[in-house]
Amino acid sequence: MAGRRPLALMRRRLIGVVPVFALVVLGAFALLESAPGDAVDAYLAGIGGGDAAQMAALRAEWGLDQGPLPRFLAYISALARLDLGWSTAFGRPVLDVVLARLPNTLLLMGLATLLALSLGSLLGILCGARPGSLQDRTLSLAAIALYAMPGFWLGLVLIVAFSVERRWLPSGGIETVASGLTGWDRAADIGRHLVLPVLSLGLVYMALYLRLMRDGMAELWAQDFVRAARARGMHGARLVLRHVVRNALLPVVTMLGLQSAAMLGGSVVIESVFAIPGLGRLASEAVARRDTPLLLGVMLLSAMVVMLVNLLVDLAYALLDPRVGSGTGG
Amino acid sequence: MPLGARSEKFFGSFFQKRTSLLFRLLATGEGLAGLTMLAILLAVALTAPWLAPGDPLAIKGDPLLPPWQTMAHPLGTDRLGRDVLSALIHGTRTTLLVATAAAAAALGIGITVGTIAGFLGGWVDEALMRVAEAFQTVPAFLLTLALISVTGPRVPTIVLGIAIGAWMQPARITRAEILSLRERDFVAAARVIGMRPLEIAFREVLPNALTPVVSLAAVIVAAAVLIEAALSFLGFGDPNRVTWGSMIAEGRTVLRRAPFLSIIPGIGLVLTVLAVHLTGQGVAKALRTRRIAA
Image 1 (cartoon, helix red, strand yellow):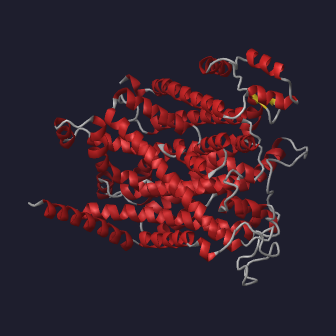
Image 2: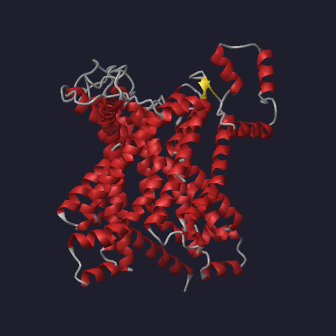
Image 3: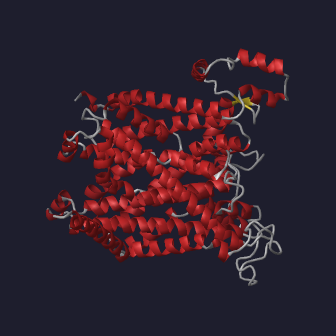
């Protein structure tokens, strides 16, 4: 069918994203409306206060004296102009604050995903190659223990182990302040700062991928086509990799999309533990300083990141599994 | 057959089924370990006022006593001289209360939405699933934070906040189950005798669709424990309650001098999540063996 090509799949997914994003925006507006105080209160609190007449004039100018529907329309048109409102905590437009923090979070998330996915799949393959063996049971048990750990606690334990007793790694920040480093030296410095946060965020999710890969493989061993391959005399690494791993990878890829939202949520706490100036820490700062427009800005941007990751995952899925996208359904 | 005998037969088989499920659950290693740990945690939570009388937030001794030194404070004291063991015991209550309430709320919302979407179909289904997708697009933790920042950090809003971020998966699974059941004969029969659609959905179809949804419960409770801990670690928990997350945050300020203050409550969290997870695994295993045996 025509829907087979990745481009057509992409177009269909993009159209599907529109109503979902509209609902997210509607939810953000509802939260903004139910928060105590409005944009005028926030703005005046930021610049040092104003009198009643000034407040009324500003409310009229910003359309805040009108009913909910005109206010919603005003909110949408502001969003369309990339105007996310004014952050009282930072005294700057929300968009500037949020975009300045985005790269750090993407870096942390990307590296943690890479760690979780690669290490998780690898150890999962080791477990799934021989389900029920000693190495399977040991690794599975370790994975369950990791899964049960709160990421922020794991982070603190790692800090105690690696930067308090032995000062091997820095315990906070994204890079050495005012170090004057450039180029590769700066990248290495950032890398050293990210080791512990990436471990704390990534190891918890690694357990998930390990489990998924292992269980997927364990089920595949009983499938007819694997038994047939075995009957044809295929065995060892070739059988494991060509028939079992390849098919067990598909749910892992699906999980990648589903976990992107959870990982963004997890980075809120991890960034707070390691004092990384990213989106997540910004969210908890926004709550602590009662800056609702800023919090919603973080929410909207995170939702966009999640949607983008899911689009990419769909595309990857279509490339991995030729059956997807050939049907009419989603 | 007289009515009494019929009901006896019905309840008899009902109880036999239940007890045999419990038996099978205990027969799995995971189920036995998980249920034992859960029972201990529950007992500690219920008897907290007797195990550790008095206000756990009250100052009881010298600050920063290390653990295993005095009988009065077996796990030491924190920065302000509060007893770590009492705080740990009272923290069990908050963790279990918030996690089970949040999971129950999430399952309740999810099952209701999923049943309505799956049974009514059409534009209702389309709309509800889009809403679920929108909720899944925003990181659940941010959603919970946003709700708490609007309503204030109290136990009911924290419970609701966690549930708002977790109802989508049960909704999807319920919907899928309902879709696979709704064309069956017994549904058509219920229509013929004049039952209303929602009545059929909730009284006839839903009970048959519940097993896979309930298997999700363990995952949701475990996630709720961790989310509650993260919230109170960040300082967005109920300030009038001791929680393990807030204990870890407290200990963090003296992490270099007294790492045990952060490490001990974390072990409590790990054991709780482990208990829930193992019980869930045990239930899944027990259900599987029953299906094979049947």
